[in-house]
Image 1 (tube, rainbow, N blue to C red):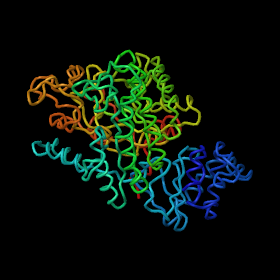
Image 2 (cartoon, rainbow, N blue to C red; image 1 turned 180 degrees about the vertical axis):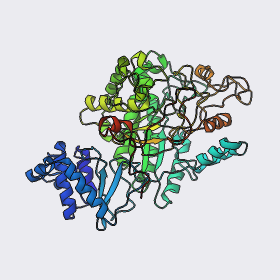
Image 3 (cartoon, helix red, strand yellow; image 1 turned 45 degrees about the vertical axis):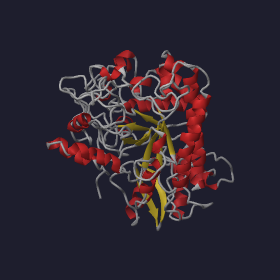
Image 4 (cartoon, helix red, strand yellow; image 1 turned 180 degrees about the horizontal axis):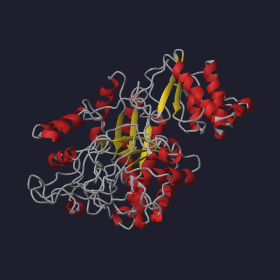
Length: 578
């Protein structure tokens, strides 16, 4: 719907229009446009007078909104009750769908004044992928058969509740990592092309999430996951991270053999299959915090990361604008400090690609807790509200002046910093919950490799703490795939990519009777059984703490709404109801 998309792109979210139509198609829809326009001052000025879906609204509509938002809410409720063809899914608590006759009018937020994008659901193009707004809402998520088979390897030797949890996990969707060029083309569900073909054959096509992860000099601050493309190659084919320069050869390889190949596949399936991409985890955050490491600070790596990410985003967005793109933003224990966040904002601003982004992915392959969302991102600094559950701080970050002690508050921090730092950019967030079901299992939260005592977290869902900011929780890191190798591999050989952080006191493979960890990305049977044993797949299952300080997640309505908007509510009364 080009006109609806135009409204969203120019920050006119409170407009509804019929797909491929110059005018609202029904009296009800025209009335909704008037009310919503009047309730949103930002929606008053259109990009042009000829853009009728975003045109200036009448004074009478403004008067109607000024008369009282409660009256408008009652009318909306009456519409919902009377529309016989309206439906509401219990799995999408942030939106309801309003119907006028046989034509869907679009998604309405749970409260007037919310800033969700409104996109008409035109029925004349049923195979069209979602454009604008939250790409996860209203979609079924693709479950990769390859991951199900990997879990099957461990299920065969598991017992009791651990076995039952592993069997349940076989039906949980997760992202697929494009960490090698060989994973892009080819048949079968071990490649991007094969996965999209399989997802397209579903009815309806299912949403697929990929991790784009193959920059030159990849992962400069960790040896465990170095990549296959280098700015300068050593004789043994590994990267020479000490070599300076502009990474001309490495970038040419990345562009022509990796990104351009991805683009060719996206052009075939974008618009038919809903697709989400997370771009290059650990790359740009390293440029904000690890420049003292010569592997990250040299000119070749800096150029590779900035130019590579910019090329990837521009190329994908130009060729396949239907694809939702999220940049990696580390996690709250990495970029959560205000000075780190300022550096990261400056880095992203310099790329000039925010017009193509849906937002950011956080905690990718991490273990940081979700926690409970506070009213503001810095609510807990200076020991301001020590009794508030949202200030629980298992990693003791607030005492070190990091306000982002959990990923919910980090999402608030990202939204505020980027909204203020880059004009017109209001990012949304997805959070990796693949392995953060336990919050306080580490001796030191800087440890990140195959953490002992961890558990899988919440299943992928759009029922987040604040759907206006957080699009989804999703398993971005594949639970069960190793973060990195132990010094000695399972076959007794020495690991060529051993990282000392994988020998930390919190890392599996260092304790008695613990089998060594395989190389990054390979299946680690011992780890997946531990993750399943400590699983917390839903807010009401398991515990989020390995000790006595148990933190229970709030209901799907989220603490941000409970604390700041609807103080009397503790649960969403619509969820799970017919």
